[in-house]
Every structure is written in structure tokens, then in C-alpha cells.
Length: 497
Image 1 (cartoon, rainbow, N blue to C red):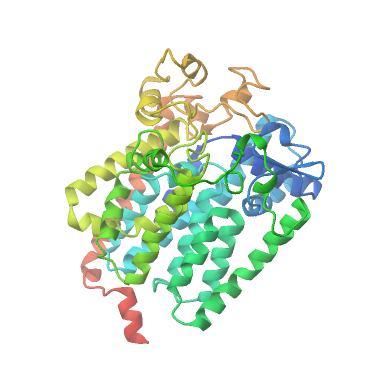
Image 2: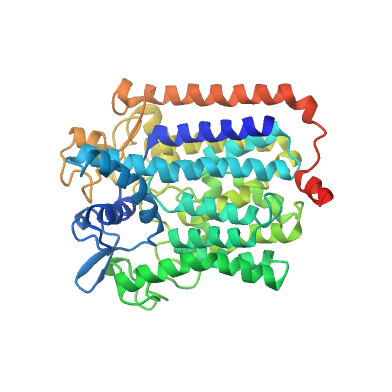
């Protein structure tokens, strides 16, 4: 009973959080949403009719396409088709922003909430108490980039959810189902090309050749769907959107035009630097890495997979010519590995409780700040957290830097400072500063009451989330005496078998 209540509470708390904030538009989201609109409104794969709002494009046979793996756009087509059926084609920018917001909540917000539920299951299966598993699942989702990317139509959180699901279908947390795990990894790759190496790496978790074949069979439908899309859009089942994408993003001499040997400055940049450092933005994850390296988790093979997945994505990210991710927060290409790292957080908490609590507090504060202010800070900012998000949240405007005076001029307000609407490629390209379209290009639900950019707008979220967290914790504590001696779920299942 307590586990069911905790999982429902986690899902509701996280979905409320991810639906409360909307990070708005940008090259990435617009390219994906353009394909979603084209699928529903025109039943076509090209985005010719909408591509003026993004530079994340590919070209083939006289048409323009999104330079993304297509899975996220196809998934978003389901809620958008419902919106389109009820409402019709968006008639203005505000309606278009609402449609994008709804698709983001249904696909990315729900994926982030499911990650919290799956993490709870994983932590409980490893012996964590309901109270600890509940708290750590929330910390992992609100104190890491999972928070920010659950509020925007990026592929990272949905693909991370499928990677975590596949892992838990093989590690003993859930009933072992290699076919379902293969299907989950196939879906992850259909959504995010970077998950393909993780799909291969997951073969390490197979116990027999038969299991490996069943795992591969589970991924075949997604592979066929991806090949069919690439054949229809780019003329070959083996030609991805990267092969013909915008030349501005292609580097001469690089593998596939985008990959070279890993760079030390990139490795620093995506780990510890204030610019895009994962451990700067979420120091809680550094403790998780230490716990994994010390090999205190079981089974050992799963431990190796968790670490190896992080290392593989780390190397790929450091090898990418656009390793910083453009206008982004943290190293967004590492997001699919974050839930795998988070599974180690109970071990980290057990070894250094005070350090864990301090790191958790910093992680939550930083990630709430960037999510509330702008999850897509300009890439010219060397410290978008302490140099932009935190000052803007507290003071109501970005710091006035003489080197980049346009930052303070364009990004104003305590919250929701992204002014790029869903139908424009740059801020104010189509909509004037101060217009309704630019002011509501990104938003949080509290701004409907307190007004655009108001600091008070985050108070309802803070109060509801804190109340839900503490109420669920109190309920679980009351049930703790009956569950204190609950055995490890995987051990219990093995004994039953």
C-alpha cells in the first residue's frame, strides 16, 4: 500500500512541477514541433511550410526536414492531433504556444514524472526505505537537468525514461523481459540517436544468447520505423538527418561532419565548469558517480552498465563539435544517463549524509533557478547559473555586463525570460518587445495570477510541491514500523522463484 501511495505521489508531484513551468521555444523545439505539425496538418515528413522558425534543419531533394531523430515528433503528434481535432489549426501565436506547451507536458512532462516512479521502484528494490526512495526520486528529478528538460520539447527526457525502463527490465527491479527491454531501447533510439550506443552496451546485461536475440528482436520494430522514415525523407534507410543537415553545424574533416577526437576543454566544460558542468549544476550527481566507482551496488554487471553508459555519453559529448549544446542548461547530451546515475544516490547518502544533504540543497536550488528563469541561456554566458539565472531570479534582471549589454536588455524579469515564440527563429524577429506574444513565449502557471516575470509566480509551485513532499513523507513515516524489515524486493522474488 505504501509503495503504491508513494509512486502515485511522486508522479503527481513531478507532473505538476513539469507542467507548472514552460521553457518555451528555440531551434530544437521548433524543429521537432514543425514535424509534428506537418504530420498532423499536412500528412507530410518535410517541414517546408514551417521551417522559418528554426535553423535545426536538413535538406534533401528540394525539401526541408528537421535534423532530429523523428521519434519525439511522432509521439507529440498524438496529443497535437487531439488538439487539432478539437480546436483546429492554431490561428495565432498564442494558440501555437499553447499547443506546443500541451505537447510538451503530455510527452516530456509525463516522461519526467515516470522517471521518478521508476527510480522509486529501483531504489526500493535495492533495499531503500519508502521514505528514502521517495525523497531521493524527487531530488533526482528536481535537482538535475531532468527538471529543465521536462519543461521543453527536447528528446532528452523521453529517451532517458526509455533507457531507464529498459535497464530495470533487465536488472531485477521489474520482471525480467528482454523483448520489452529491446523495445524500450528501440524507442529511445527512435527518439534520440545518441541512445544507439547504449542499446548496444545493454547487451552486456544479457545472460544467454537466447536472451540477446530476444532483446534484439524487441528493437526491430523501431529500427524498421526509423529506416522507413530515413528512406522516405532522405532517400536511404541508412542516411540520417545528420547527413544533410544545415551546413552551419557541419565541420570539415569531422566524422559525419560533427565528431572528432574528444577534447579536454569539452570534457572539463561538461563536467565541472560553470558553463555546462553537470557536477557544477547538480553536485549531487558527483556523489552518485563516486558511489558507483566504489562498486558498492549490486549486481556488479548492472553497476558496470550504469558507469559505462555515463562514460560513453561523456566521450561522445566531448567529441561533438557542438558539445555545449547551444542555448542550453548543463550538458544536455548526458541527460539519458542521469537516471542511471541517480540509482546510486542512496549509497552516497549512507556514506556521507551531511554532504549529501548539502549537495541536494544546492542542486535543487540551482535547477529550480534555471528552470524558473530560462532553461536556454545564451551560450555566450560563461556561468549561466550564478552569472544569469540566480541574479535574474532574485533581482528581476540579468546582470549588466558591458561585454554583452544585450543580455540585460533582452532577458528581463524574475521568471520566464525566454522571449522566442513558437513561430519565430530569434527573439523579437516577428513580435515586438513587450508584446503579448513575446511575454508569454515562456511562462509558469503562477504568472496567470501574478503577471509575467513576477517572482511571486513561483510561490504556488513551491507551496504545493513542499506540501505534497512533506505530506507523503509523513504518511510513509507512519507506515515505516510495518515496513522497516521489508526485505530487498529482488531477493524476495529470487526466493519465491
